[in-house]
Length: 358
Image (cartoon, rainbow, N blue to C red; front, side, top):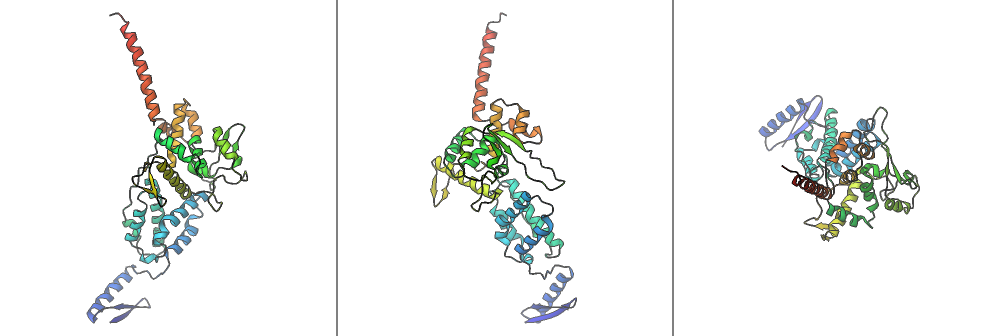
């Protein structure tokens, strides 16, 4: 059976098995309408996401930040809820997004959730949904986001894995110069001074009034990297590392390439592969990220005796305290060297003390 009623000049219909149930459903529906809980828009999430980006984000984000928001939407959010109507999105749908990304770093998870929450909050503000369901979900902590250095074993595996790999030059450049992944994506052949063995690291272009924490700078480059760059047949002013479509690498593209390197490291460590997928257990630690290459470079500077104020400039840190945090890290080799120096000091001290007459 069906029943009908009018609210603010519009006709609404409810159904029920008898007149009593229809009356109850009418009352419930009327209450929802009066409280503003009924949304009549049939807009899809993917359509709202596009409008939200164009209306709310394009004017306040740098080009790089805008691309990162697009990456969060296209790679993690829209594949799950893009085809749903906004008003049909429930917390359980969003929890599935969170489940899919729970192996990412904590910082990346927070950024994806931030994008999701902002988009749905704007939809609530525009009365496209009654309530933002993102406020009710549990956000996973993610993997340990602490960036560390490579162990001696990992460094050996990494160098073997990248020796002839198609993405090897990209990540070796990061290890030997300490540049950030996003800085590597901006590299052009014209940025290399092959005579002075230097690389000009270009910072991101900022919107007027915005300031970058990443300083443009020159960093030394090993000859083996320079030789590899020379062999790349490309226009000097084109990006050195690109996608298959010839566009600049974004964070997601770098992440996929790093995954391929870790798979090769797994093979080099004696791990097995089936249908291009790693057979557990993985021989490479989960927390090994491209940023570990950068921290390893900084630790190499420390081991080589480079003064911390010089290391700050090479790393492009805005504050020397950031450099100091990494300088407190140590590798197995530096720990062993410290142990040998202490033993030498103690032996020398003991010998001197034995010769002292009491």
